[in-house]
Image 1: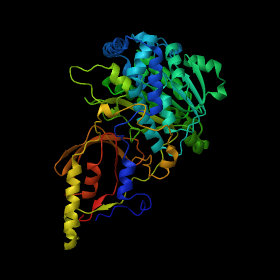
Image 2: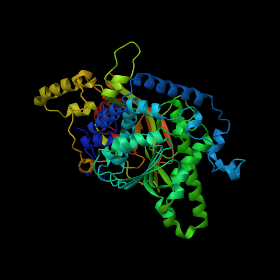
Image 3: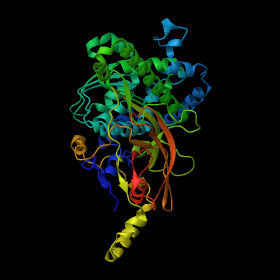
Image 4: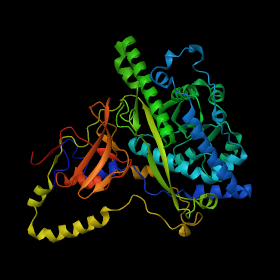
Length: 512
């Protein structure tokens, strides 16, 4: 058997907890019964006989937005991301010139009810997947004051309520559509123990009405909203304003399209550049208080990037995105249309995201530092003859599960949004104490795109850090073989798109 744990990390990881810490992907997600009932009740109150037509029209509007985004002029994009202070309009750079509706989509009553029926469950699933990872990567983080920018009908709030059920005490939402705000209030009216909620139509309205000492938020989230702002310059301005309102964690989520991924990449580059520039200036001006500067300034990426360097996919034909499968709700199955084939009982929501945290990235040890692995030949040489039958049975079990898929399709007829689940809220805080979490050091890479299993080999695309301080990264194609490393081979076979991948700087095999 391989020597699974190094001496420095012996108390932290075993082969099982290593897999548990790396696990970030979610299986087929079931929308909570409370949200399904709220959507069902809201749609019943609307009594709209033309719902299918409105859902189809909303879907067409989203397609039109994609076309508009492809036609936007981006000649100065690189300059703005690299250094927005070079802009000729110095006095105008903090003024917003475009808003959501300028790209061709405004949410009136018709669009809002269609959005609740068709899109809200999918957006909820993406937000839940992202916030769940933030909770796992930051086990001590429990936000009490939250800002939801572009809140829409409250998808991100419903996700927060599932991830941190007893944490949020105050919620500020920014949503220019009054129709969306009304729908959001209607959906939560039957919930108990709601936080104090304040609604604003813009960030400017929030800063005018809220005192400066009260503007900081533990968590700021902007989901599926930056892509509806046509100007890159205005997106950067808004993200800078959101960052200024962030005390701890900022989360950005966009659709998993080339355009959505590009927006996330641009905002990633800008925030990191801005904080590095600020840190360098502070270091020059205040050399005597270096320790204080380290604590108060800077930013690093919690997820999905394992490093804070330049994105290795930036100039490639690939784009960073992930997927979350969810069971369709009764409203989605009732109002969505399929192209000829029967509508499936699930759908895959693709998304791109990034989560920043203020401060300096911790210098945590890499999970595989100093670990020593045995090859398959060495493991077999140590077996006793009487163990062969047991090993054969284990091999058969492994082969039966080797072709398992990350999601299972559920029969839509067996899915009832009102009776499948109880109303009990699970306290996730209790569960997270029982698991081992992946640290924030550079030793945990990210599996991007689905791993490919070929016989006794697993092919994976991994984004990883290339140095101890996680200041640079690379995108590598890695092949894990059962012959050379059966322990990591088993880990690879059980890994899915979006999971973490452990690394080490002094990893050896027993033969070496």
